Image 1 (cartoon, rainbow, N blue to C red):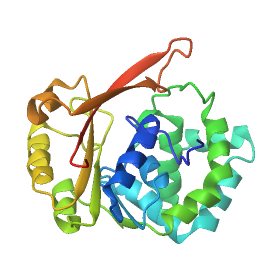
Image 2: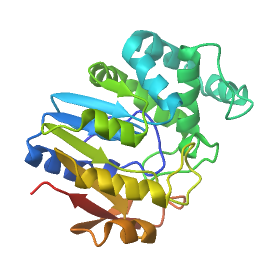
Image 3: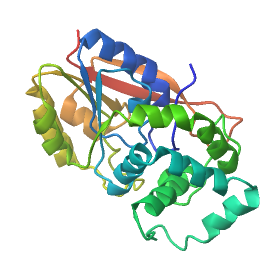
Length: 259
């Protein structure tokens, strides 16, 4: 299955998407709510009557809003940036720091897209996967999918809310909450997660009116303490590795109220 993919992102669940799709279909829910949307790769590859993408990072939400509002303009700008590898690299060199901001939402969206695709989670630390050889090649591949990506995003409801507010807003018998919270103890994100956040999340999902699926890193001892032993776990090939000659695996814990 060829996935729609807009950016690289730490902890992205590309290999888990077939299982997410299967559980979502079994739930028979109409509304898919991506509570910790991140790169959007899950929302881009799940078929639902209605999709709600949410992330606490306003830069990411702005990126999706710009693509939704100005898909042709966004694609034209990316085509200009990739007209040559030299121009692509020059654009990166013109960004003095990760906190640099453009003059408007559109320029900021371009910067966000660039940062996330040339560095690990937009932090400037380059890393390889089993499939990509360079950021330039990756962005060219994304441009080839951009029409389909823009079409999907065009129907989304976009939110920039704390997970507590989002769940309370959308909790309904016809709603499916997909939950992939940030890893605790990692500095990959602008908005990190704590054990107290996990406790609040547990209390919310236990009271939800609809259906949910929660993914956690199986090796996360804090998550295990809060949520208890997972109903089931699966092992996947980890594509975000620095040594392409080494096959690594990640084990994912699944918690769900879908039977």
